[in-house]
Image 1: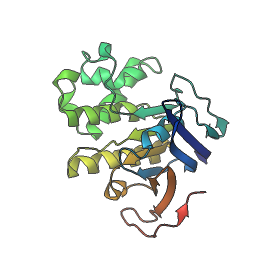
Image 2 (image 1 turned 60 degrees about the horizontal axis):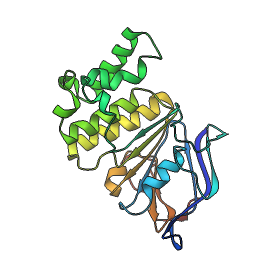
Image 3 (image 1 turned 45 degrees about the vertical axis):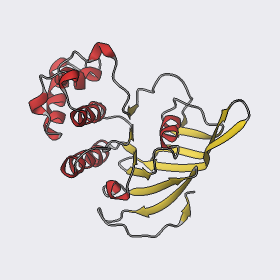
Length: 238
């Protein structure tokens, strides 16, 4: 089942009221339940804009975005079915919370406290973060903060998981752990996951690898067997 669908999405920014800066050109993309799609692009390619449009936080100039078969309107508030992981600092009022509460905060109004705690503890163990359970945000390293933000998103079991450069700056072992957890979360909870990465090697756990270049999305390969790149570029995704 297709959970995320972008159809012929284009986006242009204007500088000084006249200078046109095309960011996305006629992008179409589909991500099914349980699948992970990775977009390889450099920092200026428009991948953050693409994720914001997919999250419904920014409207496209043309084209449509749908989630689970329904139009996704662009608003200032993130749809509760969507989890978006970026490098934006968290709200200041949450930075004094211990990691356990920080990760499980979104669960507290969804389920009994005991169940929320059990799920939070399980995700901290999966990410090998249990030793940080009592730490607060200012005490964490940059790598630890990245892992905590991803764990905070995955624990919610969202319909759509969007991640902007989730493994940027992580070591090889930590990168493997994070990518495996993203893949497993998608499989286990029938979540559609879309992430951006800087290098094809960071997409080995994805079902589909795409390249965003000059605003155009190109399909690079499909991972029929995990860890193997099987196909040469085939052109624009349809």
